[in-house]
Image 1 (cartoon, rainbow, N blue to C red):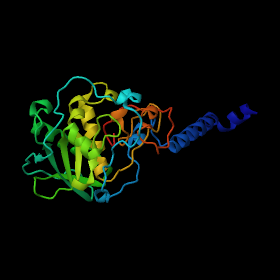
Image 2: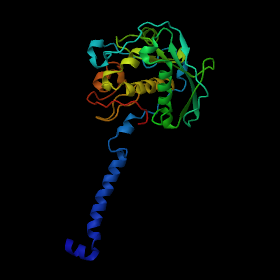
Image 3: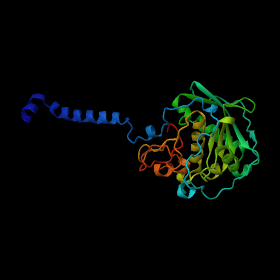
Image 4: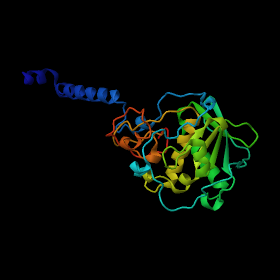
Length: 282
């Protein structure tokens, strides 16, 4: 029967089944998102966003769980690198000249880069280095501007910025973000519009990033600014082996079993584990 089919249709008799298989494969890939490893889709932030987050009266992004720090060893601060434990609780803005807007998004966020008084510049490489890292991170197309919704422009002190990206001592960070779990964290503090970057983390990084302090600093800026522009909720790992979502608490691990104790209301598969990722749109 097949020989008569071949005689009638020639080479097309072999091509038709192959095309059918390819069509099925294409449909399956489309349903799964069209991305071979799913990394970018899983890493991009969920759509839920509260653009009035600055009206909140409590810190956003601070751990809310009650587990003991000893139960989360991956969240411990790595060794080596000096930082100032107690600052003066006042801040100075790092000056900027003729800053340009980055991104094309309709919602423009202005920001200052600030450092808590009392920190030792030698520990964090100085104000300019900190400011340059913040600026370069937010200007990267893989950062928040990559979603096409927001843009950023750095301003000087006294210009009523939307966000104050502030390098902060651990003690001041704890006072503003809370310290329910005895681990070094950062957060967004709406009453002062401060994106609080814990100097201890900035200097030493996180165990989950395996010594890659540069990438961790990019993550720290993107994650905490994410809270500041309205992404309040933390996210779990969504696909095993994929890049971690930017709004995952990667400072404390990239496996769901590690972070779910920090966020008791999170609904996730405890068995999933992701790879470190510093970008909203990798």
